[in-house]
Image 1 (tube, rainbow, N blue to C red):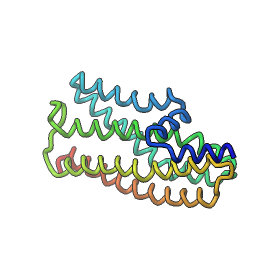
Image 2: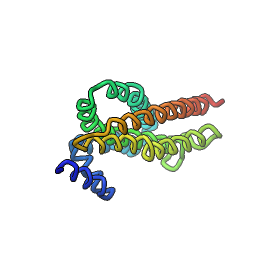
Image 3: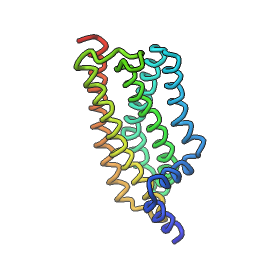
Length: 204
């Protein structure tokens, strides 16, 4: 009963309280590091007026974001599905809070650094020189918003379900199937975004 009440209390909290709960579950130092470290590198790039460092910050953060976003539904999800209900719930309860902060930190850094590169406001970017750059920037921010609205919400739904003393295996399986579909969609959009960026860089 205590666990059930705790689950209900968590899901009924406001946004700030939920974030605080997830940070505690992930480890506050880890959660803060996921957000502050990549953003600090971005800040150094801008303050140092280094286009090169800004470019590599964008590429590195984007590689982490894209790679993990694909690995989660393609490998981690099916692996969890092959575990026992107890083991799967335990891993999900430990993994998801960390994954959420990790992905938010790197994805936010990716779109911010991309914006800095593709605009001239900071004197570091290449400027909006064509359709490819404008499209890439729009898709990048759209993908970031989509990540917050869909994949993260699905992952958190699975996490909150594991907080129940008797997690609903059927519901968790349904969430995993949705995660797979969403992951395939994200993969397609990410590949399209890479193609846009390549077109922009090559001037085609």
